[in-house]
Length: 153
Image (cartoon, rainbow, N blue to C red; front, top):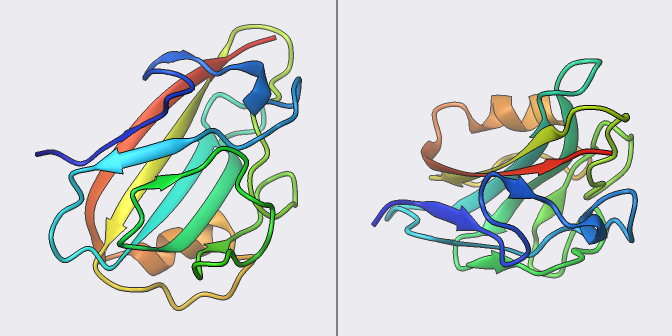
């Protein structure tokens, strides 16, 4: 069984509903996954927009999600540390947690939700940025799953 991430809110390569964007309540979408490899100790999630005018724009970074987790609910709290020990970092809006698609008018952008299965906990404090998480993950990624959504205005 391969490692896969899905959302009941939108299918891969489909439009992200407004509820999960700046044009709505800007909730994080519900996500779930299956097929994590044996040896997985934690998960990390990076959601970004490679089509942003200023270069890839980070919408969400979340790490040290326990290996027992199989999903993230809609509307994850925008807190540095969640009740299960999961940590959230700073996005490119300079905020903690998820901030959804908010592209300028024009062609729809692609939003990549990348879930990583890791073989060890990341030695990072809350508020880490994408570069810090990616550096800490080097040599520890067992598998990666990806879900792509689109949104335009």
